[in-house]
Image 1 (spheres, rainbow, N blue to C red):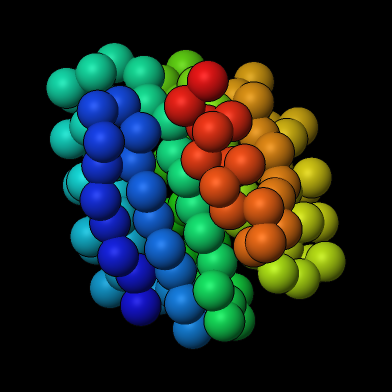
Image 2 (image 1 turned 180 degrees about the vertical axis):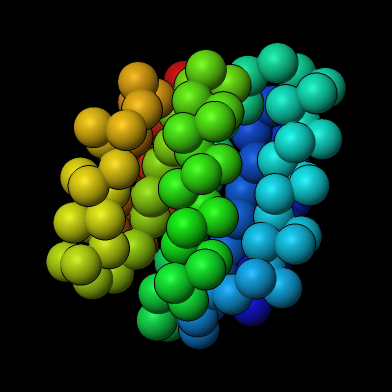
Length: 116
């Protein structure tokens, strides 16, 4: 399950449970719409009670991030588990986008960073 909102060029995604293709059928068009509007965007991605991605959803996410690496300025990954932090580290070689992991308790700090 995901919720999507935006404030100017920052997209806020809150993901819970497991992300699948139905989630990415909403996420990707929303991100593309904001890229078309602003050129570059920031992406605040919060994981609450998160169980990861289906394989096809993970692939879609990776393809989007690589294809639009020049349109993503910053990505704040906000989560509660070490594997979520490891995913942030694994993404870094595939993009020049500034990516940072924040613990859920540091959500407000992550919001300040993404908008700085």
